[in-house]
Image (tube, rainbow, N blue to C red; front, side, top):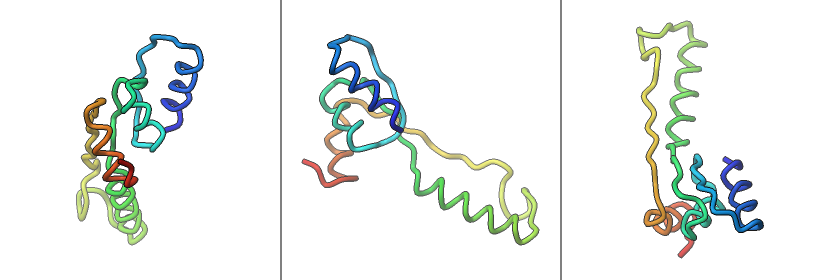
Length: 97
């Protein structure tokens, strides 16, 4: 999650016109997205990923195998957001306006 932020800081300092595409919804990254420094971000539902991971870990610890009570692979979604999406994400996640 810190890679796009570090790249955006470097772009800001050097004035480069490099295009940045990154992952996740760090508050600073969303501000860089809003300002057009970052072109787009892939945002994942970290809460669901964590929930699924813990739920499956408990099932495995209880002796269950994939296919019995849970799939061998979970389907997690990544949504790509752009500059026009940044303000609403900042509001929803951090209360920024």
